[in-house]
Image (tube, rainbow, N blue to C red; front, top):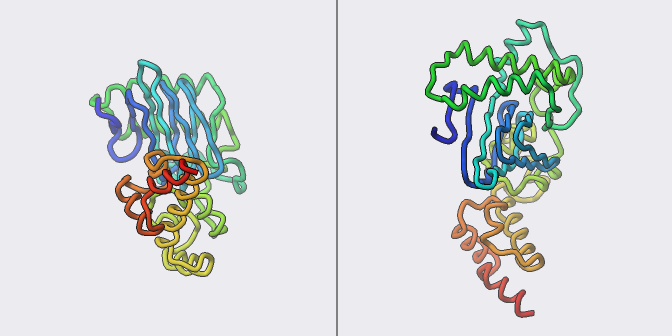
Length: 275
């Protein structure tokens, strides 16, 4: 089976199988239900760190940035099934079931769903689809399974109706606080604008007023300054931090670092050791 394998093309089920530990920065456009089959998944956002293991369910909220660390069992595999709860489908369920949010959701953005026999039964019913990605599954069958999962979530946690069925756009949030908490994520400026509830033009305008620099320049400077601090004061190696700070390659990081500070990261490491 390919990894990840798409089970209902376009949107619904994804299965991920791996024998290696992997880390990935993600942006979630839609609410997402993660069924942990085996191994460990750690989700880190600016506000939360959640760990799941085999048999657990995690609900990830839409319009978020985060890092996923996927670790297989010793001598075994890491396996998850991911169900994207698309907004169009959620709106359809509202119409069919006469459900809607009755107030603004104010809880955490990511929820570890408590153990529930009905949800565990649902979990087991989805695994055969995931492990047989080449099998026949129609759109109608897949959508029925997603609807079943949503209804069982609401049965287990009725308050999730305000989580799932709130379709309001992100409100205009504190730009300075958000960027200081999330500068390390390597995503387009357009995504940062969306996540702070602004148009791209409005984001650039507010950013300049707040930080005195254009977004891309500020992000580069902030990441490099943070890297210098970690190398000098925390004795960390470039190879251990460049990905966490949003750089795509070690060579790109080293070049940018030397251009800004006049010497390579290894030069600062050597100075620190010799003191």
